[in-house]
Length: 450
Image (tube, rainbow, N blue to C red):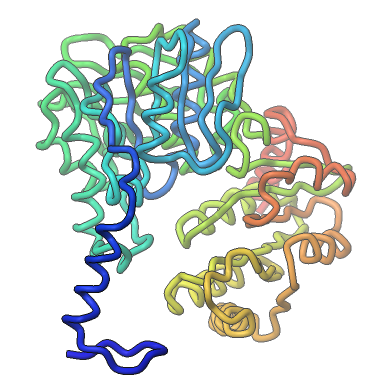
């Protein structure tokens, strides 16, 4: 066997010997430290919804009066009645983030986001947890780092469940069969969550469930009467109940807080005060309003999240108005996935626009990426989709042709951090729960008059 480089053909054995020699000369870095938590700890994983569920669970702990710290894709944070502090900036959803959380002064509750890549490289960073949450398992990053199938991915995500203490709880998506099957790997109790109570009730052997019944989030436990928690429409991140995935995230966070033993009144307060804005949940279904247009900004990093974004947007479009979709994706996605992003955007929107994301090309030629998106759009019924050079140019172009009652679904990646100021420059302000319910009511009038 031979290895070919700039020096020509070198025997593979010689190349390996050289690599081993180089490794021996490198100074070892600090060793991995797995922390044994001494405070109530929640670990959260899944394909979609990890970060929102992490942030919301932390918010519920804070609403119950605790000093809480959490790590997520936007940093390491701590919060209590005195305010919220960003301790470390950047993507800390992994091993190092967990360790940093556990070192926060005065910590009372820890919430750890456990991402796929971090678990594969170094593990969870904690030896055990009181509550392990799995939001879902869907196709994303398959073929990367030895994870080739959904079954492989589910086995990895189940790491969080296997870390649950015997007196703890696994909080599992009751509508996802791969996640629900993880119940058998929990040493503790199992709490299922599902918007449709028929999928998880009657309780059977798993002990607890958090569901939606008659528009209210309900807590079910064996040998206890059901406990009403809060009306779903009063939970802002659900976008008046239209955002199915954020309904699931709210149920998961409520279940995690409940299983952690937090006060149910505080949990209800936290659900009602956690806003879908750039402060509490940046990059995740953030609505902005002008006088006559609603813009929803979301990272929408894969097919499922783009579908979810478009579904919410469609549910808020006023009668006779249009849904505009601005999409794009990362260059390291499989060509079929890139095409599918284009197809979904074209088939779900009344107009479709693409934005190049040069800092996310990851080795792919920008023209090739644009071509794959256009191919997908053509399959979705739009053969002449426009690809703009960046997100801001795409947004300006779309806003220039919107009309009263239109909704713009904006899949934003590059400008995610400064989206609030960006929208302010374009005459928009963050929408609150009242705004969203008003738009939902106007859109619903379209359904009732058909």
